Image 1 (cartoon, rainbow, N blue to C red):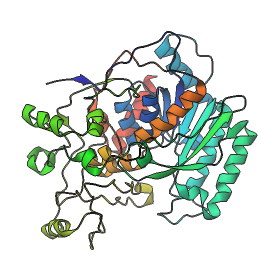
Image 2 (image 1 turned 45 degrees about the vertical axis):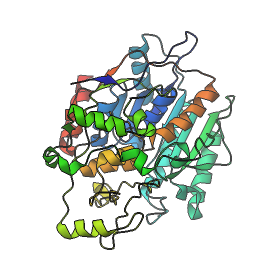
Image 3 (image 1 turned 180 degrees about the vertical axis):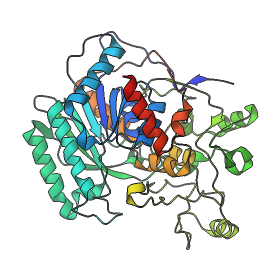
Image 4 (image 1 turned 135 degrees about the vertical axis):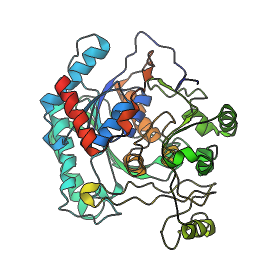
Length: 434
């Protein structure tokens, strides 16, 4: 069994430092990972869903996770958590400065795909994000949301939010932009609004320029992965250990995009903490069983077309993926998101294949159930898009971050298996130990 670090270490400079950040509405950690790759240390992450919080804790053991309702989170508690984690990691006194607060408040109330209700209580969460920025006064902030927030009647929410940030002493970067993940190396068409703010007296926080003229394709992202139906183990578990021959074949067929997700090639712009992991483990790959009639229909569905019954769209090898959605949580009916049909096989894609299409590296694992796993992917900011935004914050800070010299061991897979009761009990026990 081979264990690898997820990337090659970069040379360091004594004059450089890693800026510190906080992630609010963190989910499983896509936004955090991209910011970490840009060079930030994510000291604290807040997430209301105890299952998502547990998955975050597995993938980012260096970060303090605060599970709970962010609308009830006090700035004093958040500041104390930042202080403790900073001093534990650096062995030095924290100066009280947070370089960046990031977050993507739940967006269904603004979504063009939903009912876009002005009275949706989730709309108010953007103002709780603003409240914490106002109280904690980071040097910069970035808030992500759906494009619908800046359209129609919802513009009033955006205008009021901007006014509150201005009253709190922040300069907003205009015009407010919608960024497409496909313009930043992600094999998925995914448009999201980003609101950037700089504290008075700080340099302007600029939007990232488009980084690629050609996004990776679905083929670039998943063609090297083996057919899940060849593994009986994946009927009952979400992982399998690949043979040496199969793993070598996978490496040989990997595209430049995939080789970086696998940690095979050097990525000069990735400053994330190295993870210790076994690259021969194919994870987040629980099989989906379809009835014979569905299999027949999927086989007959052309690329980019919808299956007439399930309304699932088939992926095209030579195109980008359409926007991956998360579905709804248990509080909103627990509806499963539409899962694309694989471009070659008559089945829906796996969580790992969705993660590849979202730019998550292969060491990053999700909940062992498909329902939670797909929600965690679909709700996340694609790491490569978050990295591009994070690099602009690094530039505004005037820093050249160093690469961490210690590796993180992802050693507690039980965190990926919790149901809601087990996850809640786990976080209660963690709180008692502190």
